[in-house]
Length: 300
Image (cartoon, rainbow, N blue to C red; front, side, top):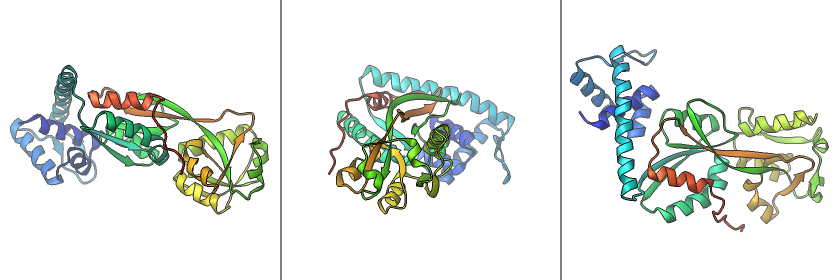
């Protein structure tokens, strides 16, 4: 029996999915089944109740999970402590990020990190916000990058920075001539919004409601790139994070207008599962994400 088999079992218990357990450990589903079978033979106990309706650990499985988790955490802690003593920063970091952060905020920090630690492999996946939380809690990824972080007793949240929300419109739109605009001017305007479950959409809805402003939501999308494309064809106006429109404003395919009388910012954060032993690589990666000295790419 090896530590790896106990880890596969713990990942299966936490994700309740042979597919996800295989993905986390970079093995086949068949290999997951084989390792679970090996553990059952070793301990002469049924560990999982095989049912198509619901995944559930047996009483013996729950005991094995509790002790295996402690063994794995101690083993990880030992490995990471030895790396720190030897001043080694290497390994793999699995990151899940929402599209806007992954495409616009992350690149300069990732570039700086890989330049400083070339032996670390950073695997980045682009996900919807709710999926980022699911992946972090189920250990599919080590770290999540989100906006408007949700408080959860199972998560550690590291605040990163705040990104200002700006009004955007087509360059020929009447608003484009303005440098500043009041929220009241958006009343009855055709509005390109994010889908209702997106945290930025919920925040914008609160901002408009607090100002007593109602807009005509004519389109809804799940990512900022599609929102921008809709505004570029003059389908309506929108509110998006300033960092996501640098290129379009530079090329004059979009106009940005600052909103008067309100400092409206979108908070960004890194999240990881509470109790997770952070490797030296993860600690350094989070430290760079928190820094303010990453070189931002120049507009082209």
